Length: 353
Image 1: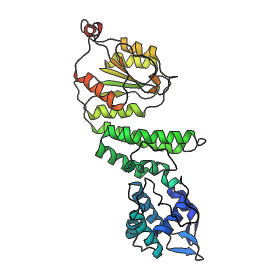
Image 2: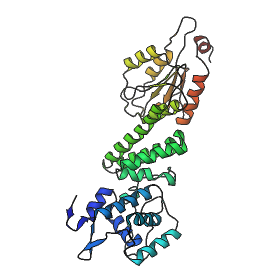
Image 3: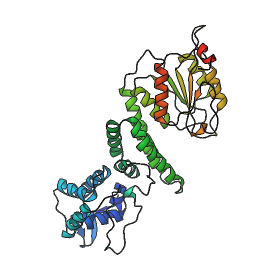
Image 4: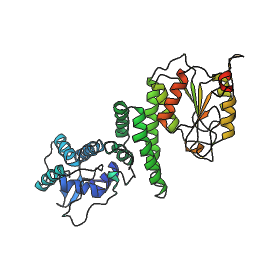
């Protein structure tokens, strides 16, 4: 970071916080969130106290607080008054205007040049059309590589809204938005996708570790088909099953066919979930093999129900003993019913049950 005796440059602060220099200048002009001193009376130089105030501003706007109110709170915490009367006036005007999901202030109609529409501080233009406005702070924190905020937001999100809503309405749409941005921007934002995925995976595994599944039910086995590396959707399913008191065995990414066969024979699972993200990885022969496996004592042998999860299985009719759920909620409903309905024997299977 570039530092001088007078403080830190605007560019260095912007890089540290993951917002654009334009955003920092705009916050200074509109809300009085500026440096306490300026070099030669013009150039901004930010002291450690100034940076702490900006960090508070970022945390507040990420959590959904309107920028004007966030600025007021950040200044109060720093023991600062706005540097210029115009900052307070702009803040009052902002309170009367509807705020969008961005942590950018509303455009100033009198300014000579409006701030860019896709500054990093606003989520960097991530296409979050399916994410509720009050949840968009996760994307903004991800773009800033703000791990502490992502951790807190994910924890609060699941605690307040439950796993299914958190996954279907926030986690998955945000991951898809980051992925689309990465694909369309020349391999940029890979670091954002990796960090966001890690934090979501951590939040899901914490749910699994905190639960106490019932022991008398055979587990649900979850695995990615060979060559498939995407595990987050079945991690979400494993968390949802554990949350409902059902035991799981998660085998993760790219499970070899031989290893899957051995695991099914050893565990005798109630159901097997096979995840495929792309048609190139979906193996209907493998799914058929698993569905045909049986275990148990003679005369009461059972077969696992096979769930074909993920878009890779689309376009093919399911065979007996297989189901293709439409999403996390439907998969949970199917598996909860299966695990509480008792074993599926050869006699039932052969009569078309």
